[in-house]
Length: 311
Image 1 (cartoon, one colour):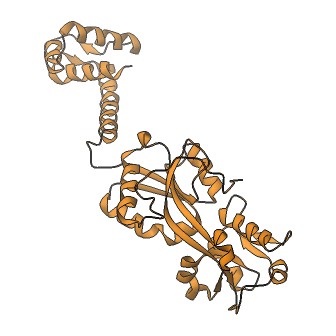
Image 2 (cartoon, one colour):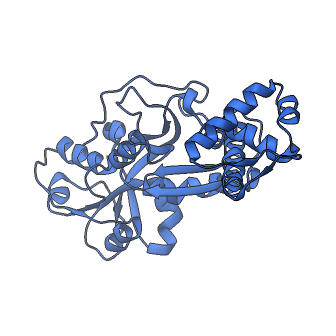
Image 3 (cartoon, one colour):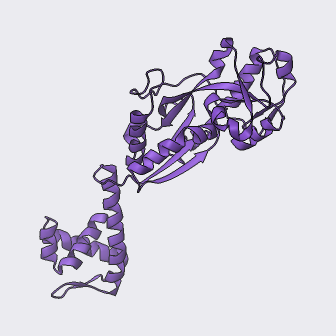
């Protein structure tokens, strides 16, 4: 059934006349008659009593209820996509767990304040899984480590994190290679960019094998570090916010390892032409309230990059 036919059917039911419906829709009466006949052929039932006034049959009353719902949904969707309606709809957001815990709460609170009718859904996981969900259309945007290698995705840096070594006790100096090699590391599962930084850190110290324990949540990692199970590599700002709660300590990486310590969190999504009103609202908020990272706030970057390699 065509929406155009349903709209003509509704107009006839409302006006009680084929001629009045034609005038209302700025068409000719024969066009209305043809569309109603087509609807009746498709439904296999008479939909209108040709009387004065014209009124729907029992089958017509049933169809009219569904027609009104379909026409309303169509008009609302079109208004949203064309920016003629204030309600921005729904937004599915993916994020690394560390970003969700530290950076997103104030942003989501502001987004909700601006658009209280927006439905928000937040999923957390490693960068690799967030990019996979984004490409599959399961989320609308994601906060991940680094720009994506996929040319189909666009993004720009929004936060810069400095990774630090997290330990149960204060460290007077950065651990020696022997200490690092004999102590387990606690990290998220494969696909996490911070876990990859652990591997880069160990490789820079000539360490080829070390135990990396996979834990599912940030609280589990910090809790196990606090219990003395091993080290973790996490953003300094996050540890500063959680230090009193878990009682852990941190040590900066040596200056020679600055390339490993500095990580840009990027806002990544699809091409701008496909953005929904809700996604545009999030992008606009980021442009307004987040300080630019390396001067990249105003330009959406889409070029693929070689590092890091998402596994």
